[in-house]
Length: 151
Image (tube, rainbow, N blue to C red; front, side, top):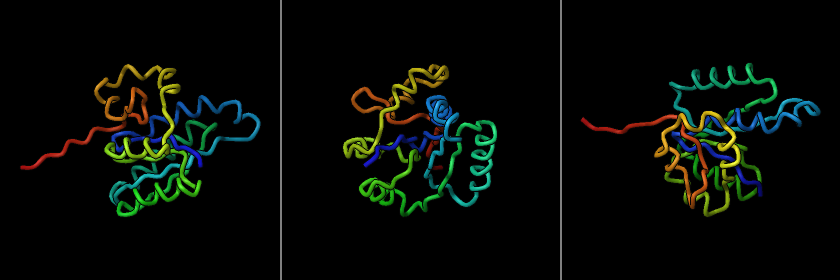
């Protein structure tokens, strides 16, 4: 079963430039590296998310991101089931409260080796990194911050 690199729901597409950098040798011989990415996006955001991925793919010819919009009600079950049969995505976005569970199931690949080489690491507040750390290892990357509130 392959481990996946995750992006915690607060955490997502910033991982692609890191992967692209690591896969450049493969690109020259075999074409672009394909990254299968799963993420639930509400209908209102599908166009924006598709545009963001298209822009990334256009500006990074060495990488091709293929996105599957997984229905919210099925996302957790689909991730776990896919991992168990060895057919999961390369990356996915998820709720940060799933990180400990998925890490304990050995589903996640630590990102420390990539993050340590990324010049933008220091631009992200340290406490945001902590939200995806287990045992001192980073299993996700901050992407956006959602603030929940009630009037």
